[in-house]
Image (cartoon, rainbow, N blue to C red; front, side, top):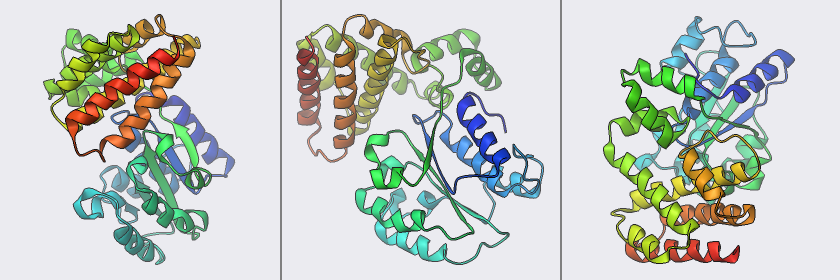
Length: 324
């Protein structure tokens, strides 16, 4: 298993292993495509590896089965949920099952993907399960946004950020996929160190166009061009597209805040983030990030796409004007 980027998270896991104080619950934070799932599998290997070293051996029966997703004691609850979404009934059934001992060994690992997409009711259903773990249960969560996770849940897990790959790792990973060098350069400009997003986009040109539209919207907001911003939002064709664009806008404004603070930014559209940072104050880009994150969470629950897209434009322009 090759892990690109995520150096800080891997180093933290190694420290946990060597110290003998491995947390019973981990949370890997990062954008979709960044490799949270690979890191979750890596963590499961550390819990289960026969050799119990500082890193998984990758050769024992436990590690091999985890990598192939065929280990009987590594559970992916989202795969078992009705309609592919978390619900309280199925979660409670899962919890009941997890009070039984593991099938194959001493440890069971539950990997809850996309925790931030879990409802408040579902997160509350997990609370006691997490805070009073049986000796044989371990938990791994993945998420993109902390803001959608209950504080009571966050306080019971050890959160580790998944940092992006640098350009060298990004190039190596995409070269292995047979992507041409000039194309890799364009994808790195758009997606930063998010290897998964870049590979997905290579097979779906619409994603690239949506990233470009998000860049255009961020420019219109930064320069206060409300009419152009409205036109761009009105052209969004689906709720899924709007959700993706709001997510990318969040990354752009987060990157702009990093640039204003003198931090390195390897995220999506990093050059666009720098351009935005030159036009707006730190307070303003932070406010825009928070507003985008809030709109992103509300997107799924607004039935009228056109009205909500118009609201997004108005809210972001208003947020921009607050800082002027």
